[in-house]
Amino acid sequence: MAARPKAAEQPSLQLEMDSTFTYNGKPVALPKVITNSGGIISYNFEGSGAAQGYQSSDPPSEVGKYTVTVSVAADLAGNFSAATASTEFEIQPAPINLQLSGDVTQGTVGQAVNLTVKITGLPTGEKLDVAQLVFEAEGAQQTTPPSETPEGFSATYTLEESAAGGKAIFSVKLADDCQNYTATTATYEVPVE
Image (cartoon, rainbow, N blue to C red; front, side, top):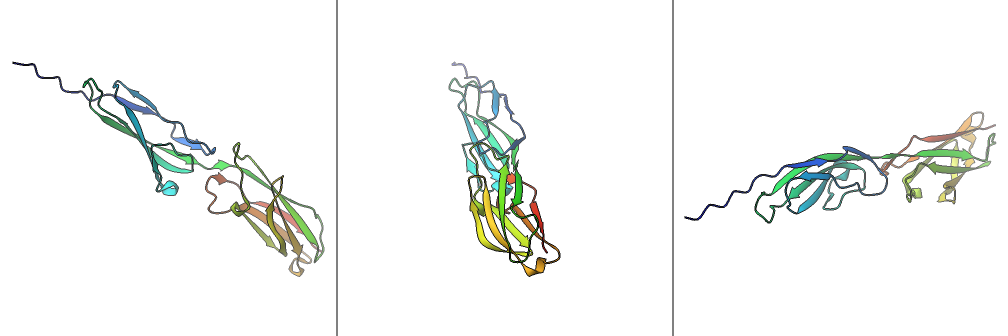
């Protein structure tokens, strides 16, 4: 009578991965897989929340919450069966700094104010485009729309009558759909005579 083949054992399978990452424009590192099986390892990343719809064998780079499922196939020798393990992680927005300045410190009605926005803290190789910023003004009317400059962005406003005897307040913030970054609103004020 022939001996029965030994049943394949369930392998040990453990994942080591940070639970949070800060957005840097690059895919997160694959989790460290600790197993006693020699089976082929595969990865599946699935997003939720802001990352809903992301599903790939490649690690994500965008802000959101993710689950990675690691599968180890049965080894060729038949010693270990297939197994899976999962872990969750989050890519959080990168903090950046918006600086708003102007070329007028004391203004009069009808005077032009040229604003400059400088952005610091962006990950290497990353840049914002003008659509990712929201410019707002009280007591001034925009005369030149925001545009990109070598230093950042610029826009021109004309001081209005409504600011006379008070001040014009300018601000710039990140657009709501700019999910990979977080920044406080930058403001600039001009007293108006």
